[in-house]
Every structure is written in structure tokens, then in C-alpha cells.
Image (cartoon, rainbow, N blue to C red; front, side, top):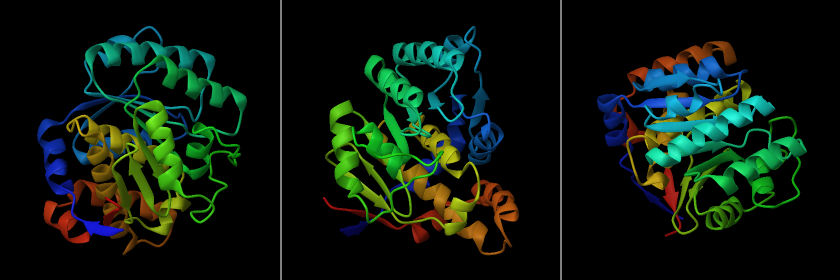
Length: 271
């Protein structure tokens, strides 16, 4: 693969200038962290889960992020209403298939959302993406049971992207972002990210934030991950463990500069 330079810094500035509203129906375990990540980037998060207002809230948003991490039947119904409104308005929907492969309810719910609505970006770890693509992988709670060497994620994610006509962001030590034709490998990030509950959920929110201002969803997802993971690298330099790392991560996202993104990004493509 050859190294490339993405226009991630310019998209970062665009997020801060436009401050898009990003509607979430997300994981109750990490809802605050998702909101703070979006806010730290300069966008406006809203967390409206009630079935009575989910569609209306999507009508005033620039992107919709769904996360099935703490899914219930009521939340699923609200997701469907929010998706319908988002599709009608033409804003991107990001689906974080958190825990897909752990239970039949999660699997069937994800597949129903993808079948019945236009999902712009599917995000998940290796196990979750393999499960969504029809594989037999089993997720350990919400953690991946597959190592980077166990499966060729560019192939698996590419197959899912083609089958579902969407962009797929498979996160891990190396993130793969693809629409089935174009493939980006993002190699930024830090091992401490895996020691903090919610970094995966935050990543989906960041992807939604960047997709709110960029119609090329492959570029939006890759650029969002680049910026988030460079901030993680910077945060890790002076922290002592996962607690101080999370606080530093929000600080580093908030203070991230375009020139720093240009200097530190590590993105590769097979094109």
C-alpha cells in the first residue's frame, strides 16, 4: 500500500465553522462521552431517544448516529423513525453495530435497519463487521474476538460495502474505510484507546460529525478517524493511565490544529 495525504485538516476546520447538529440514538453506557467528543470537535450533539420525538429531531440535524450497544425494542422503534426522517431529509446515517455477533436480537436489528433504510456508513470492529457481512464470528460482549491477522478486513469490509451499497469503517489497530472500490487504511491511534470504555462509540460519533459536512463518506469517515486518533496519540504522551487519558483526549481534540493533522496523519491506500 502507498501512503497518501487526506484533506483531514480542512475537514476539521469545516466542522468547526459549520458546527453541524449530530443526532444520536446511542449507547447509554457511553452517551456522555459521545456527546463530549462531538462537542470537543466543535459540533452540536443531541441525544434524543424518545420514540415521540426521534423523527422530529432528525429533521433538524445534519447527521444521524445509531449505536445498538444498549438496544431495546423501544429504542429500535425510535431508530426506525429517526432513520425514516433522516432518509427523507437526505442526511447521512451512521450505524455502529456495537456488539453484533453477541446476540440474535442485535444481529436481526442491524440487518433490519440496513435492509429497510439507507445507511451511509456502517462502523464496527473486526468481529462486528465480519458478522454483518454474513460471517460466523462471535463478539465477546462488545469486544472483537478477531485479531488484525485473523481476517483480511479490506476484503471483508469491501464485500459488506458492496452488498449494502454503503461505506464501511472497520476499526482496530489499523482502521479500514472502504466503499468496496476505494480503500483507506488509517494507522493512527494509541493502544490506550482500547483500555477506555467508549472510544469505539466516540469514533462513530466523530465519523457522523465529519459526514455531516462532507458528502464523500469514504473521505469523511477516514478523516474523522485520522483526527480523533491523532488526538489520542497526543493525549497519550502525558497521561498515566486510562482515566487521565480520556480527559486528555477531549482536550487534545479541542485544541487539534490543521498543521498537526497534516504532519501526523498515517493513511495508506491500495489504489
